[in-house]
Length: 161
Image 1 (cartoon, rainbow, N blue to C red):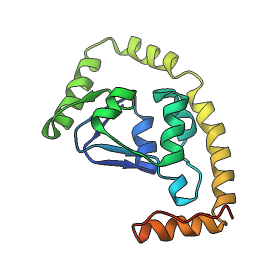
Image 2 (image 1 turned 45 degrees about the vertical axis):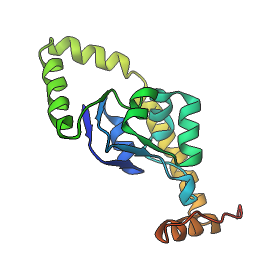
Image 3 (image 1 turned 120 degrees about the vertical axis):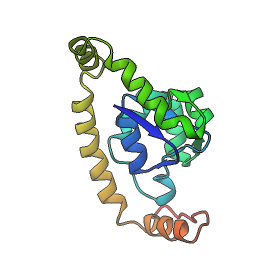
């Protein structure tokens, strides 16, 4: 599975991009985990998939701050695999898919299963925890403030309530 990211991969879109085996990005690509800025906990298994790609420290930075990671930085930290011109994102993703498809399919499937061993179980466990935290935080003043602040395009004024 190859994600061709030509614009924003934010929130659930980030979760979708992270579920792919590879990500092709461009200068217009941006990856954002803005959950804390909304006063909510991440979901979509991001608790597992993001640190697995970029390491615990970079994942924490993205999740705590909601930083916008552009294409070049995404490649540098391991969030994306290739940076290409905007017009080449789709063709590069298809080229990579063709290259993989030229290999022995049973071997590719076996290798993929080994590399991703335990991932589905870890994501399932994480999404249970993520849902519990989202449910708890959804009822807070901070979450309401985060949503208002985002709609008004301003920084949140969080009170820890």
